[in-house]
Image (tube, rainbow, N blue to C red; front, side, top):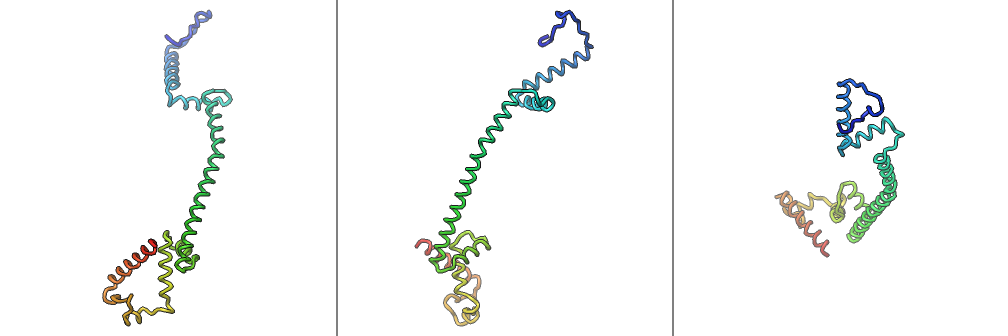
Length: 185
């Protein structure tokens, strides 16, 4: 049989029980099969290295060293990428808030109020925050009595008592149109 050692040339005759010989041949066949399987071989080598950690196995030990060196070499690159990403995010945020500040100043609204409103209410569009704050500046409890204004027939309040939903829809469309005009300008 292939792979068998012939001890007869050494002048010694081996005495092996046929069952034990069959078990040894089956074990050798199994190990040969695992050794030749590209998916199972690394598991076999890891198991062997666990039992014999000081034994050098080039395909395992060299690969481990190369992986460690690659990981170590990638650290500075990963750190640089993270720093660049953070820098870009900060620059993008700075540009966003600068644009929001200029819009607030152009509308005559305090930028701090715009920023607070946007962050506290989750508003992502500075135009919406500015429009809201402008509308709140027009309508304050000290300067506006909605009941008197509606009853006296103020231009913006026409229809509020007769059709509140229709009035609200009309005001929303009017506000959206005004925002679009301001954006286009």
